[in-house]
Image 1: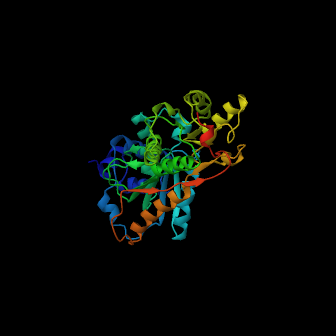
Image 2: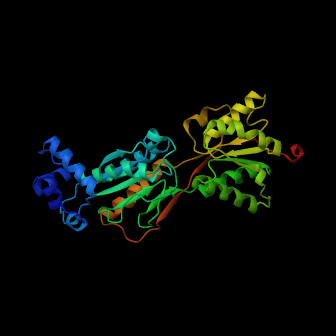
Length: 351
């Protein structure tokens, strides 16, 4: 493993200079700083975890790494983290990877591109001497973002860490899909269509599992013709609704409010109306949902609670208050928001 002395020798500076640069101290020339950081990056230097652990005084700084602050879900999660950190006198610093802004959704399978942005962010968090870090994903998936020897406590939210060593705080998507479907059934619907996100997406899979469980508990056979997949966009709702209408559904459960908007567009264009000719439900409770006409029944994401819970997990550990080993994956339930887009369906309307 490369050492500070080796870095210093290669850059023709003292080990103290390298240490000052890695610890973010200002008394170093910019040209020297850039040269040292470039060598550190090329050689893959990692601070010694034992040496870091010898620091007596904590900085009371928490690092937040967000995949993209423009994602609709991220701001609420980050706000929840900051809220609970402030309560215990911790400051926060945010690293915004801007993954969606850089590459939209084309980076999912590009490990090289992802790590090229993530690695400097992790290094910056270490250099700021943060006591711990929380990673905020843009959508749920299994990822490996913390190296094996990462020297400070970490928590992940809105996704799961593949190593199993980092606790994750996620949505209870299965319960959300179950409760929405159960509500539609309680309103008399048995032919319930689904417009999901990508078929390989964890949010889609878990919400579909909840949908299927609700059908099973109510003795309703699962019909694969009632399920179709999009990509979370408004146009998906518009383009996929016709095949569900041909299949004979009386209600449509859209796994995103954006896609529900496309369903509304199609209905209006064809002389129909949500809540009258077809019951429509969404998921997310984005601001737009309240202003649809009629207002959209949907599931509210507990974004701030995700952030608050993630912060609690980390701060309990830092404050020495962790009394027992918690589950590695903590699920936070969504909340059903009943509005006017779902109407009661009677047997006389069937067939």
